[in-house]
Image (cartoon, rainbow, N blue to C red):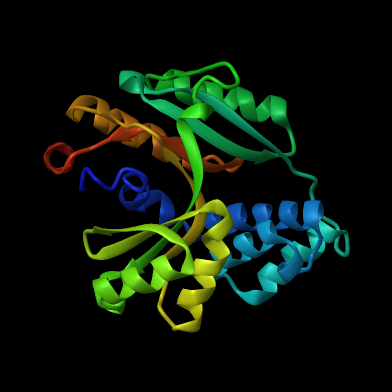
Length: 251
């Protein structure tokens, strides 16, 4: 785990949670449904819906699932009414935790999230206590063998990307929120495969953690992401290669 890869440290190390494809699809369907409810079912006219559909396709969700989710959002099919909210708090070692949820019962969800944090060395905080530490960005992950790095860098920067970083055997492309769709479309037109294509939250500053806190934070993030109502979890802790190696050796 490279220390420079701060915004995707967690994403690349939570394979156990991501292996549960059914759970991933459930979260994606919620986002598509809410996006369609709020902005209509036309993908071209609804940027949030386009982003949600893009993320679903990156996870190989069948088109029928996407279409049904859109129709539930627009009211053409009956569906559950989800509300969006975010919880903020702290994890072991004082790392900031930002949790985005979609739920049909806020009281139930906040209680369960509070319990997960409390039992794993963290605690929930007041609204606004950590949100200011994060900025919404677009994240696209491309396999390193998909294209020469210099050529890919030129392509995505011309399309409006902010940066390209090499991490393990992947390239991570970061965009401003408003440029995400343009960069994604450019890659799509060039038939460049994308393993991840989504909006994320990148911390303005990161906190290095030792082996003890790193292990506890990774476990906490997995438990939160495994909750049915939690869409995404962000944190500002940074795990170096050496610390990650120690964590994996002790597993």
